[in-house]
Length: 129
Image (cartoon, rainbow, N blue to C red; front, side):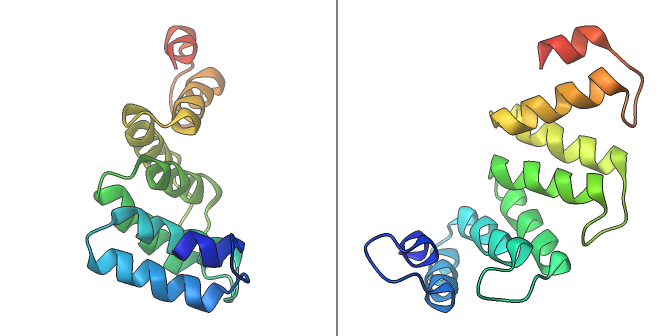
């Protein structure tokens, strides 16, 4: 229901209702709901942009094994949004996302190796990811 209210699938889009439903999903043990709430705060959908809260939610979801959250947390570290910019931490989170099968995480790990962001350039690893 949270996604339905967030994007208006079959109901009028309502960010407040989406937050209520995502919170109920969290109470049922759904780690991905933290990710969805993180996105709402990251993009300022029906709430003010709050990068610190987005990072907190992404971290909770990534800790629950949700690979897309690990990727977005990596992006927050890479760009210094809600946290101090830290390429090493960005790589750690991108790697977790990649190892969890997230295509964007794989692309980001490859990009870090390709450009030497926070590490030595490694064409073999770049091609692998």
